[in-house]
Image 1 (spheres, one colour):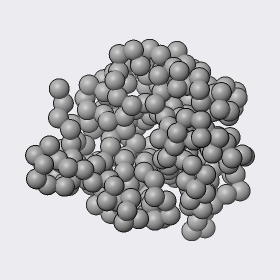
Image 2: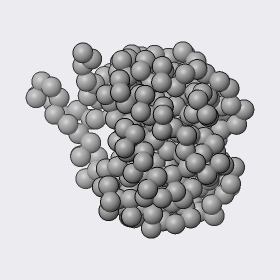
Image 3: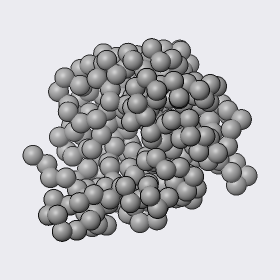
Amino acid sequence: MVGRFVSALIVSDRGAQMKRSFRLIPRLDVKMEWLIKGVQMEGWRKVGDPAAYAAEYAVAGADELLFMDVVASLYERNSLHDILRNVASSVFIPMTVGGGIRTVEDVSDMLACGADKVAINTAATRNPDLITEVANRFGSQATVVSIEAVKHSGTWMAMTDNGRNHTGRDAVKWAKEAAEKGAGEIIITSVNQDGLGTGYDIELVKLITEQVRVPVVCGGGLGTTEHLRDLVMQTDASAASIAQALHWKKLQLDDLRSTLEDTGCFVRKLT
């Protein structure tokens, strides 16, 4: 863990002080052509045009964007290709895309549409060797494993299909196995906390970051700047994914960037 934490430190633009690198990643859940948001991955409500929100967040200081097709696994296809091409033509920050990624060819298609990284969930739980195949073909930096975790009797179950189906795997053990298979990043989303705005599952994030030496993106629960402060100060997470707080205008990215600066993290200057 020490090595990974050290790797997350960068030299500030002044060159005199080492600061922690921490990324802010708006998460855009998409169904068909709509940006949507639910609570605990249910009760989805329309938010707006995903491309417009992506452009707004990029200008406002997002470090990356995360697109998830929330019905892709149900229909066994990802429909984000056109949205990705549209966003990639005008937005120049890294993009991760997930939902319905089942094969190396699916990954190739998404990268060709402008994604920088591809997140795999259901297919990886069924065939963990897919992680290795993708990492060998495109590099671990492009290989992300997304884990939806539901807390049950003091443990966290790894789920698929927006938290509906249990994979039979323990989320913490699965994160470790996924990293060993070649994942270059883990996205851990607490379904229990998702959409509530009551804070991240700090205990879960600590357990995951103790098990893996790759960056961990934490999702599910941010509602105030204090929640981000808690995540930064209490865990070794590398990034926060944020959805409802931004989509419903409860917070602005500028609020979160100021919080990172207050906690001693590096915050890049906007041009």
